[in-house]
Length: 552
Image (tube, rainbow, N blue to C red; front, side, top):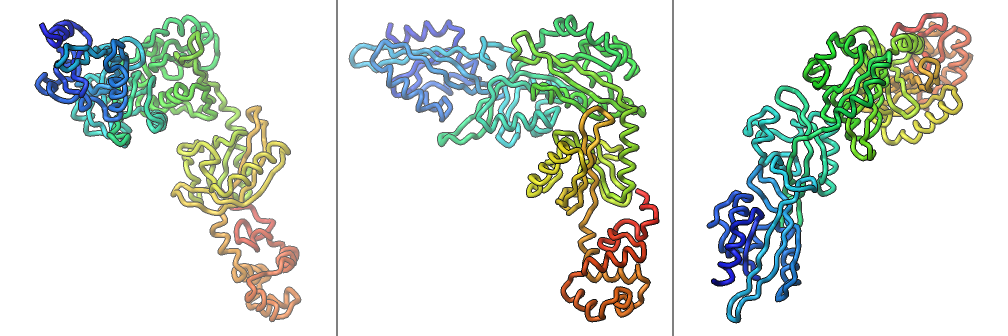
């Protein structure tokens, strides 16, 4: 019996992948386990070169390993990726092999066995499901099992982009960033099922490169997430949750409610049986459940406490809450196993704050922002005559902006940060001009005045009034200012205005020519006629100081 027959017989009964090839790479034998793993027929493999069967980026590593162990009895070991049949997933296999020295005149043989590594670094698990996507998110191939678990057909999934399957934009941003770094070894993602429900998976993703090293795709495996900590969460936190007067609950890493107190059940009008062991998407309409689950995903992804400073009652009642979601870690403080959430009723405080906001708006401002000490925008208000600042909703909550950084033009950030520091440290108003972005995504010059107040929630907040100056730039032109001086003095001509100011007609002509109106003219007219200097300069607000400001 020759060496090839001897070693191929031994590999034929192995559950591990087996291959025999010559030192130049020509494949002489592969066992059934290898063919089953790749999903190919034997005739598609035999006679080909081993270097054609592996990822181009790993050819050099394999050639180096073969060369270093040539003509020795040294057992070489190397981890290589293999493209497999399930979703064209790329699995890592740990190969062990050695060169078999044959009688003179015969080519030596390289005999190797490969054992698949678990997608997440443990032992092999046949429940893993493969996928392959492009760097842009197009789905090239995917296991039918994943599609079935999410309620889609394979054809439906292949026709979509990965961005449409993520439950949360936070997942999309996080995964995109991690893939740019070269791959993901132990990730967790929440996908959106066809019925709108969330489903969580563990996963791994590796880059597939061409011969030049350029990433052409990412391929990996999903595993259904197992969360064995439900009993621990219930045991440790049920006494705490049920003792709290505020709405409180605990949910596991797969978004299922582990326990909730009576206040939580009353808030949704459901029994504890309706809630326990189910995700919010199973007992709430999607418009209510989706933002709740998205915030939970953010807690799990960022591994930190997330506070929602202002949220309306879940079912639309005229109540306001402050919601805190805090991650719960395992005993080793490494993995998040769930979260505990608490909703505190702040309706009375919000009503008092709203009254204060109205008093600021009555001073003739266009918009108002409520900002905390970290620059996060909590509430907004806008006069009916003015377009909303980017992200403001009708009830004053903020949607697509979360920080003052999102609102200001980059050139104005240093000045705004210094102004915030001064307001918080001195607790006095600070004013300045800057450019801000409006809902139509254009920038506009505004006048800002930031007020300090910490009386409503026991924490420092800034109440920032905003007046749009884009129209005021035109209104501030010397011609417009002179026209308002004529109006205030009831002068029909510039000659009459000159007489009122006790200056020559030439002075009026020079002011127009030099595009500069002397400030003392404004002061003189303001004092003698009772006209607002602000109105004379900008045309905004009320003309006479005795009048009531415009209704906002």
